[in-house]
Image (tube, rainbow, N blue to C red; front, side, top):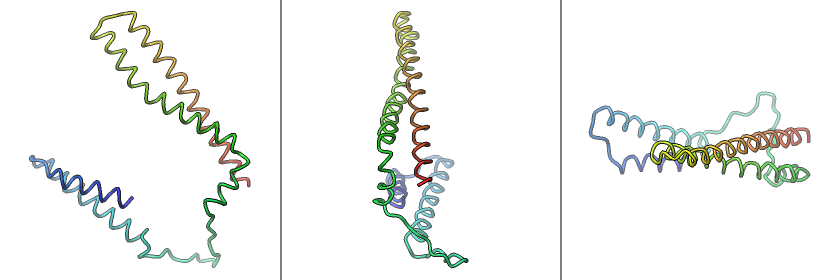
Length: 151
């Protein structure tokens, strides 16, 4: 995140401040915010400040990625279903604005009622499929998370 913030601030600095006073104020406020966020991120999460130990004296345990994946291994069919649903839902969500543009073009520019009905049908089907797979994705990841928590 510090790399992202630094690159975003650098990009804003390269673009240069806007010419108007309000834009310039926002520009410098944004740069200062990115800079402060980056400094706080590097200082706190970079290891310069250590978190305080727990008051009850219990040492915190940390799991490796391998151990977490080993716990999830019995649910690989559910994860495969969830990631497939995620892919289909994301593709549908990406297609909806395109289809909305086609519907607007068909009615406003072309004035073609048949194209309008065709693109409206595509839009409705895409929205329905996207909704179903979004629900499937969410519920499947919820089940996987619950099963992981039980283990």
